[in-house]
View 1 (cartoon, one colour):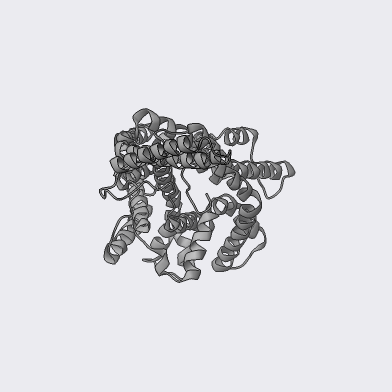
View 2 (cartoon, one colour; view 1 turned 120 degrees about the vertical axis):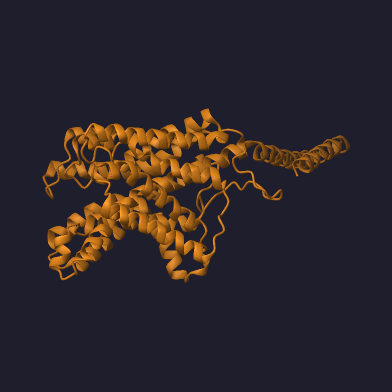
Length: 437
């Protein structure tokens, strides 16, 4: 196909040159005609270049010779998965973890531990976020490399800044203000504020524990920002053909780091918030991108059901018998990679799904909630704290009220704070990652 496109480009270029020679004595308006012809020839020549990059990059090459590199990559199913990742974290922060609480409310003694495990296992939605981010970023960079023959790291950094920083620093400023005003028993001290401002919030949490602030969940944003800072540079160094090697190296580094921290007796969240110890889900996302190469996996309904049940079962068993907030061998050496594997299964499962087969209201709601999931994650602990100061009802009332306030705050934030920067982000985009950018 590349040869045919090249020949077509050469023929059109020659045609443009002949047209110019034959019309040069005509009116000056013919210059416009010539410019248009040359412009078309140049665009077709670029198609040849993109085709060559696509064939040689080894990153997005398809087995089908008729498949072209698409300068956009958007999977609405992954927006829905983002919302489910948030929902897990929200459940973990909004419902009790104590078995005694559930037994006191009449649950059987055999069932209460598993309900408590479900609430604790919701924390693994963070790992799912990591898998998703690594997969999407790697896939987009692979496509950019195939289309342009290189990586525009400067534009990548600008895109990440425009997506993450406006809400992130707005919320940090709000948390600092709450501390200064002494509201809601919030204490976001100077050392924590500086660490989070410098995008090292996860490191101070690893060494000193979480702050007594609704900013605490933002430790994971710091960790993701560190990934965004380093990964495109590493991709340029290792080239896209060696992504698997880089990902496997990350898995080895994560295992070795946790082993050292285990023997050193580092308490929670020293492992949970340590960047090097948390590379498993990031490596899994990279492996998925390198393996799938932009393809949508084809899975039967039964296989998808099995994958979903398997992933959720892994999370539940880990939460019950090897919780990641325990610095013990089973948790540190087996629990972390198992949770990352479960997150990878969910990504593959959702990539293989087709939302168009669902009722429009359900699919569109899931997609929208996924698009505002960043705000949902940032605001949810604030909403839980607000409801906790006034609500004296049961679990259901407290949980639902907190969720509604979280959604409202996030929708307002997305509309008036985030979207203006997302529109600006389009100027630095090579591969569109959602409708309209």
